[in-house]
Length: 232
Image (tube, rainbow, N blue to C red; front, side, top):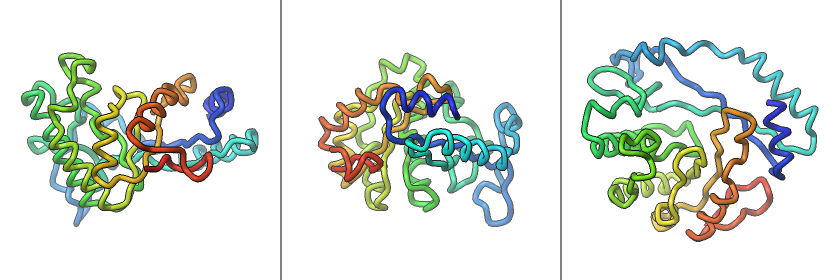
């Protein structure tokens, strides 16, 4: 965390957010996921978080870097189910769908699950990883075409906009196009956030300048203060 804060200051960011992953490995009565098995290749490796140590590290960083706003939150898994994408009776990581079904169907399946997430959970403020599987597009992420899934994008974005929530522009994934961010604005979306998905300190704020160019071209502008979302 300290090194991430140092990187944020070095590149001129006014704030940084630490969002530890939150995944559930078991369901209980009433959970939609209770009857679905987990894929041991991934969820078996999930270990409990040292919450006390985590929060102590956040507080230490705040004390060491008083000029940097340091936020703490969670990157929740599919909170309408509690863990992941259900497929053939198991929870699997989204990228593991490739090979089990045609590539285009993977994206359509993922978008359909996102729609259920938006409509089935109010536990989150920002939707991240709008098109996560494209990172692992078998033909190469650079060959993925957003326009091939325009209808699916618009359906998901319209549902998200109706809830008043925010769309993340993730700069680790292949960067969203101006057209896609414009679909978000046309759907009624009013705000975007920037996330570098920086699992390494050196990646904090990576490609933010390019992301700013993208959202500005789509009609979004800096918010009311340096800590605000960018708004239409």
